[in-house]
Amino acid sequence: MASNLKSAKDLVVFLGKSVIAFLESMVFTIIPKPRKNVAGEIVLITGAGSGLGRLLALRFARLGSVLVLWDINREGNEDTCRMAREAGATRVYAYTCDCSQREDIYRVAEQVKKEVGDISILINNAGIVTGKNFLDCPDELMEKALDVNFKAHLWTYKSFLPAMIANNHGHLVCISSSAGLVGINKLADYCATKFAALGFAESIFAETVVQKLNGIKTTIVCPFFINTGMFEGCSTARPFLLPVLEPEYVVDKIVDAILQEKVYLYVPRFISFVMFLKSILPVKVSLLVADYMGALNIMDGFVGKNKKE
Image (cartoon, rainbow, N blue to C red; front, side):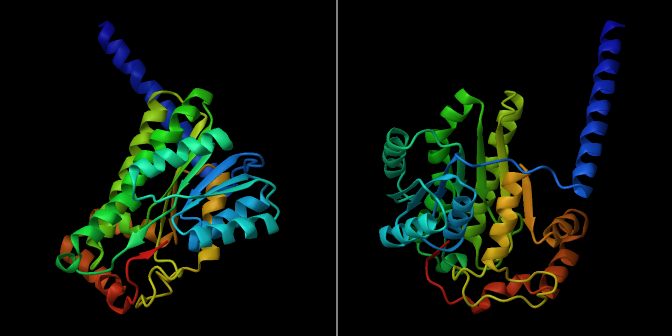
């Protein structure tokens, strides 16, 4: 009898919390959630020397954040550092770091903690792509893709998450991809790394929820292909549904999602519908839809070589 009462109570509590969470979500769909203030927050961005990482740095510079910029390209990273200062940042620190090397990540992370302080917003953005059929991908490039696109997330979390837990304050941002949601022709290694990064970020998010670390937020970003040069030559057959995105537009969406503390960001929103179709349609129909949208052959015009984000 007592166990039945407890089960009934648990069910009522579950239903009540679910209704509240659903209503809250609906309200914030209609009314934008208030944006948090990130002035003075220490923001670390990997792959800051170009592309999306550089644009993210410039946006956070204008918001008054302290910037920690990581990139393997010293010259590009220094250029981003200079541009961030011109954009209004008063404290910017550039570090040369090879995100494919665990020991280099740990070494530079210790240097950052001593020279700058505890990271409060961690943006794992660095990434590379080969863009070849699986059997044509050299082993060393596939290993490097795993190291940069996924394993680097493990080592940066190991380095900076403990302080976030101690302070119950922080924000973990995973730049994954639509290629972390569906498999794409000629992107086997890239998809594998992005699926892994997304799954890892979700798992750490679950850990923070279970441990009631409400001050640590997670944002997982899954954009479609971005016109940063990384996917140079790629195009879609139906750009009105799935266009190759302009980086400035994507950065606006990412920063807005971070400020509103959204857990998931799909860019464009049509990706959400694609995921819904993937879950309900027969495989053959899903492939026909993908072929119609040009997703199966999007890499046919790819001209890059081991490009980075």
